[in-house]
Amino acid sequence: MHELLWGQRPPAPGVTAIPSRLLIGDRRIAEICADCLALDPADRVPRVDVLLRCLREWWRSWRRSEEVADVVARADFLQRRAQDERTRAEQLNRRVQSLRERIHPSAREVEKLPLWTLEDDLLRTETDLHRIESDRMAALLGALAIDPQSALVRRRLAELHRGLHEVAEAAGDSAASARHLAALSTFDDGTHRDYIRGDGTIAVSANIETAVVEVRHLVTVRRRLVVGSVAWAGPAGEVSPALPAGRYEVRLAAEGFHEVRLCVRVGRSQRWTNALPGSGEERPIQLIRLGRIGPDEAYIAGGPHLVGSADQEASSLVPRSVWTDGFVIRKRCVTVADYIDFLDDLVRRDLHEEALERAPQQRGAADDVPLYLYGRRPDGTFFVRPDADGDPVHHDHPVTLIRPRDADAYATWLAARTGESWRLPFELEWEKAARSSDGRKYPFGDHIDASWVRCLDYHPPGTALEMARVGEHPAGRSPHGIEQLLGNVYEMTASEHRVDGPIVAPDGTWSEEPCPFEDSRVVRGGAWGRDISRCRSAHRSLIGNHRTMLVGFRLVRGLD
Image (cartoon, rainbow, N blue to C red; front, top):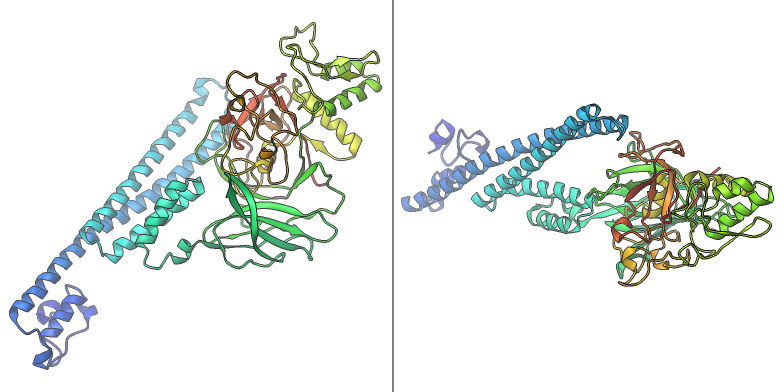
């Protein structure tokens, strides 16, 4: 037996060659041979039938290991193929994105053929990738059926389920995430212990050395995310102790400065920092001196955040992390009272024609005989009155029935009056204000109810549809106290409508020019006359240079 296994006789009585030099077999067959050659007869295999049983057991195990090795080799080959297909899909996706930016939706069919060809290639590649990954899973499960205790197969299955769990978590698929985490826990040999436990850390710095950080748990109560107990507190710039993977509210404060709040998601074994998504360059959070932010304004600190939707719901952007610089946003949209102040100021400056041109005009008005929403006094100033259908118009209704050029004129007027650079928000600024930095689907969490927002589903059957006042629906506030980002009226943005949104640089930063008034622009947020599916922070729609009862606006300003 020794000569068959090693190619030579034993080197000395009672001694066998080193197992690593076996010509065939494994350590177990070497141990059987050593038992047969023991110097003390009492230590040897006692009878030939016992030896035969040991050899049969070894042979069955050896055959299983050989079969398993063949199957695992195929699974490893499929893994390499999957990686190649994934790389190809990423390259095709970049080319598709580039072409989409260059080809306008109005282009002729012949001009779109190269794009369609690339999109078809991308779809085929993604289909092949899913098939290959399914084949890999089937191969490994087949190997496990051959040898349920194979450490190699269990290790490969643990690696596979960890990768699938990461994808599911990134997509927000809680059911798949739980399923793959349970499988990972079953197959793990300790390699992924830290990942399964899910601890992470938070480290944020500020532009003020004396700033302190407080980290609080975010918990779900009645389907809303609410702030819970303190998880950690310490100086800005320090790394928190280990925290369970999940969502947190981070507060930064320093004497003489406004408190900054942001909601973050800590991934498994991840350190959350305020860093550029593409380069990892960390940037301090900017604190603003007291008095620079009014009570009706909210400060959205610059930082990384998620845009788009993994399930590609209607018209949303492709999901990705971007960096948006800090800005201040009005907690409420521009109201009828606000806009009448603007119109009345035009009148007082003897700009009567401009005031009439910019005044809300009701749907169905003839071009030559405008049907104005507001009434006018003898001195030319404006007042609210019921609309053409007899429905009441209130001072605290959102202003509607104006064009983007009118909203822009209001922003310019307010900027001159206040000395602040008010403007329409770009769509990624609007989305960050609605979703914070933890990627929530709605301002209040990952669930929505029709009683929280003014939408079509809010109205019981048989009741008239009506717009809400800006103070209604407090359940729909964002973590920053911003009112009615979803529902009631769509909100204009300064972003030109492009299928793939603004161009994002490799480090996650982006920049845009304001949309020309004659072009279609993005509106966000849903409306009182639209169903609840439109009331999603990632949902995008568009408006041209026209008036509608469903669209209003709110303003933002940069940090000058």
